[in-house]
Length: 189
Image 1 (tube, rainbow, N blue to C red):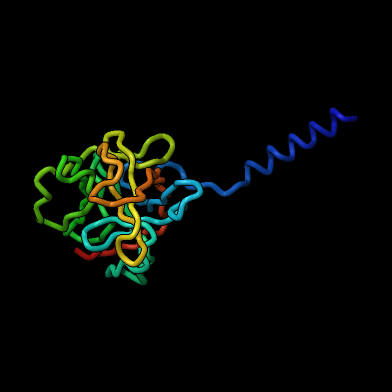
Image 2: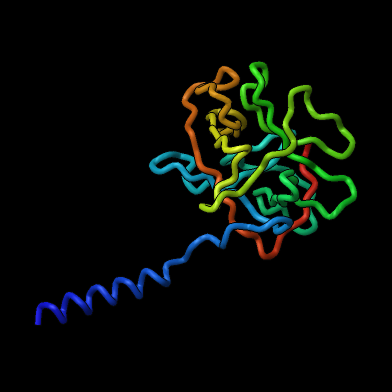
């Protein structure tokens, strides 16, 4: 009798686990996705990534993007051939870069159109791994607090624990979540 009860309980827990909502599958090349920060027991856990002022942020109150429709308050990305872009239906792309030099300390930003990237910027090497996390050649992200209206700035881990003179920075995972209805936006620079 106890065996039947244990078997039934195990079967019920297994079947209920199958219906737990999960993030979409890892985005393939050229699919659109948003980014969600993962860092348990922190103010940025489950925060969406926003784009403004040529940088990426978490918990930014307003990104002030010009969108086809209402600004959703978060950025949508596209990955193509190792390059990462902000999604925009336009001939003028906005491309993400990272500067892992001693001067850049892992600074992450974006350029618009024919704008030149910073001197030591890396434009290629972005990947979404089998767990669904975005990285640059295997380097993860760091989030630093108290930037704009309580938001957190995003950096690529370049071996500097507190980049840009910040304090209270945390390592995070940037989880890619497929966007089935992407909203095209031009982000401020």
